[in-house]
Image (cartoon, rainbow, N blue to C red; front, side):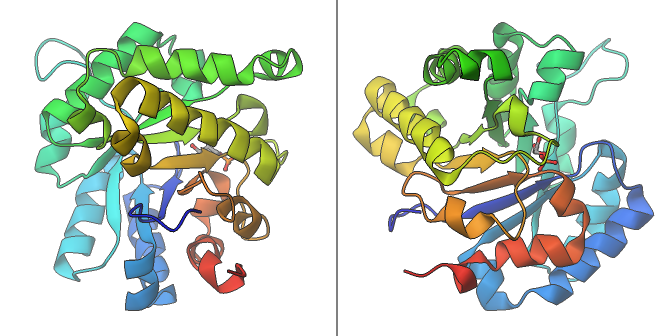
Length: 263
Ligand SMILES: O=C(CO)COP(=O)(O)O
């Protein structure tokens, strides 16, 4: 983690786990496990299923918790005949700050292509939500050493048509597909290689300052036991955490990573 303007961000992507009652219990436990200093130093965010968002909002607002929240997806459209979809304005009205866009599970199971991801990034920004844009290669691409080019292409496509000012609001998450839910974490060096290349690409296309300001996360089997090594890398500004974010104690330990990083 570089000593820059970029505030570390730990975001828990719950995926399709926890109902609204379980969500309240987890957020309460997480808040009690972390003090004001820890939550100020490291931005801590939960990304629950849509059905939990109203309950999470009520709890966080009511108790003035220093925890942020957002959604896992949004429609590229603002409203209309799109059965089953949830729009940016709906999420904004619920006080969401973030929304995940282009997660590999949505690319794979819901056939989201680069154009859809680009439209969703634009929709999020248009409604005041910060997209957490996921890029990442599968195992075959990694084995053929095509990972940097693959992520760079996904990034170019997803950021198409945006201004530098908009790009600064986007959080980019490098999530190698082979490391998601597999227990196979990328090494800190693997994470740095792609996070560094992503930042360089942003700088090339949108200017050096934008590159310096944009946060780049790593995601894939992050746990309290491996987070410190990953965060020690200069271009990794945080993590997108799946399984480990479903356990309040474990998630809190991940947020407390500065305590186990030697600087
Ligand atoms: O996909 C992920 C977060 O978006 C990573 O999931 P895991 O942490 O469960 O590997």
